[in-house]
Length: 260
Image 1 (tube, rainbow, N blue to C red):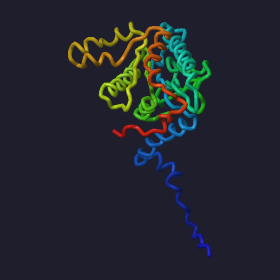
Image 2 (cartoon, rainbow, N blue to C red):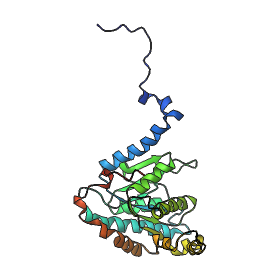
Image 3 (cartoon, rainbow, N blue to C red):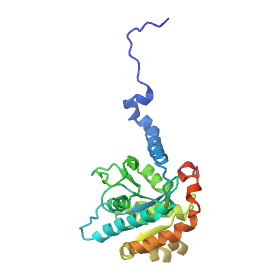
């Protein structure tokens, strides 16, 4: 026999309780969501690995440094065209950016023009960084937590190309350089700094080694490139020896990562 309803309202299920989900007590759930939601999309889209582009959101195609926008667009187009020869059950070397304007837009734009999938890992900011229109629809993500966004930059990356940028670009670049330097990644990531004049003016890498702040061997953790064609050749030289038989490989996304 069914129990009589005495008029009391059922409380909402915890996972449907919006007030609880937005509370401080649910912060671990929100963090976990920013891991699991992209993971489900990457699996559904069969993304095996990526090439990450960093660079300023402020650079415009017709601005004073517009050549960097144009070069990022061209390099992303070349990389995507090159990657198509490894097509199989998964997508290889998918161009990935921070999802916003400037160099990020240029990278997604070039990959889209080459007919490839392309990823945007956007972040909610006070000055509203909106996603650019060239990101593949099911690979367009919005993050609240910087560290989860950085995790997804590193997790699938096979290489990193860093175009001129400011605080955000420097933060992202040095974090990945530090992870490579300290062997905290289960894999090495070749890093290429695009625009040697820019980088050598704003960062005196040689002085860091001369003063003993880094090992001189750490200067080998990155290389410079000044044209899209040169950058592509460096990427190919670093990545082609690792490729093997991509159609038979288990996607990186399905493998466990170093828990440390």
